Image 1 (tube, one colour):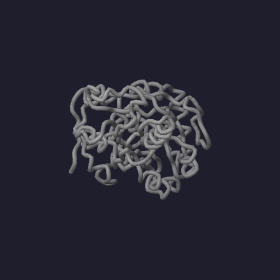
Image 2 (image 1 turned 90 degrees about the vertical axis):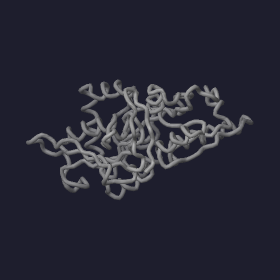
Image 3 (image 1 turned 45 degrees about the vertical axis):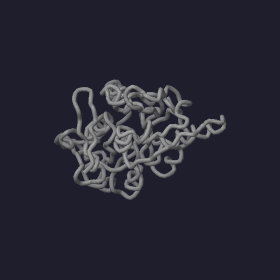
Image 4 (image 1 turned 180 degrees about the vertical axis):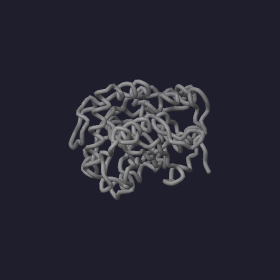
Length: 290
């Protein structure tokens, strides 16, 4: 079993990377809702009656990751627990590789994707998406920044790791078109199964950087393991994903409650995340990164 040593700001965190592929061994639940609380979603709306089953990819501290006991923790877990509480449901998190999450919610294996998935109009055509936060793509490099990478242009000719093709991959691919048009070397994009694998490759000197959301690169920089060399590329909303209309609409209503009562603002401030200022609703088409 491969393990990645993740430096937390308070202590070293040992993450079991192999657990990412196990829906059973890596599941996590919070306490059941209070007695007398009537579930907002019925049996036909859910994978399991009374339970909000939530998929995540627990390799992105501090957003979603495994603690030393193997429990899934982080900002998205905090948010999922609070949403489930408002819906009078018991939350259950399953730790799944990112590329399996959309097919899984489409086929009814879980009710909601809560993994820091970027909103795109193309994704909104395949599943229901509710934007709720803003993130940009940033690049982690080795401590000391030996390659002196400080801008997007400095990524030219460098080997940069990303998790299996997604928004980070698309961002670097778009950058390569600009670099090529300017007569510069292109970024060598290396894909890995998980972001944890990508960081492991950076630790081993197999790549010169890892592209991932800024909240993750900032976490590693605070821990003293890596440095953030480039930040804020191609900012866009992140969204929760659903296969069915009713759960999507119920969660959107819960998010609006959490915005109105101040919970979202406090949560985002704690984790250094920018809130999405648009309507918290099932969305299609182009949206603004605000």
